[in-house]
Image (tube, helix red, strand yellow):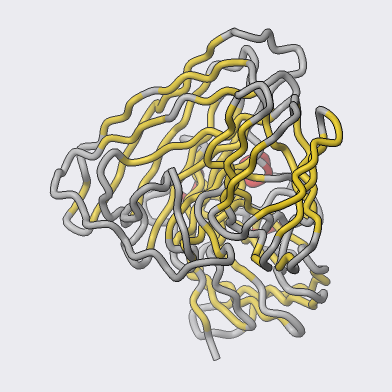
Length: 392
């Protein structure tokens, strides 16, 4: 499966970890238009089979068998934990500027909710709609197989809720994996050396990419390989296809490097277990309207996620407002480059209720930031995303 151009993915911000991602702004190609949308009303999600070695990383791809527009969705992804450890992250693939979501991690499961403001999510052919990253236990036994499946799936399109089904997948212990890259982010200059760290690399290695041409591929040892790029390209979102010297293959290796460094762990368990999936949109000033909807007040937890993707640190002020727009409470934070705030509104703004509903205004002084509201429901341990709205 190959793509070219500037199809970009919304990605979770997890401190210091590499994440699988589809598509991207790799050098070499214009934007690929969405595929013709399928006419069926019963889309099927396919979980692709995956192989990864002990101590490596399983990059689990999930795709639609027929491209279809998705406005919103929820899913509970389950897996047998005999060899797979806790989920390390998730990417939603499509229009990076409009797709947001929240994933909640628990043992053997990833419960997620997501939304697309443009409805182009799910309409791109030849790329999965999501990729989930799960580390493999070093004690995993080669050859063992484990189930990958959904335990609950809802997808909504422009005309209502689809009757969605899924095809389960299998994880097999073995092969090799790419776990990290250096540089992790930004533009790579022509002639620059890129390093992949991983598990079970074997000479000679063949690598193809959707963006730059590559040369001087060198497997230094079983955990390290390097190559040189002929053209400059953006590391974020570029696809690499690797064939090991023992003929094992790692296809569709997509990289995302927007991984915020968590500044302080939330003491609220549901918020602490959440991974925000930001869009690429950044704000100097924005407002979140936190509305409980059908969540009972006793079960409601509201929170805010703020990430600084800029090159410099910035002061961020979080303010709660009353119905007239008057500030009720506020607090200022320094958010360094690549920093991530992820806390309940009660933790972010003193003397605010854990189930606060209303408006929250966020202002950033030096660098625009990514912002996402969180609506947590203790009744089913789910968290829904709330998109920010820019304000003057």
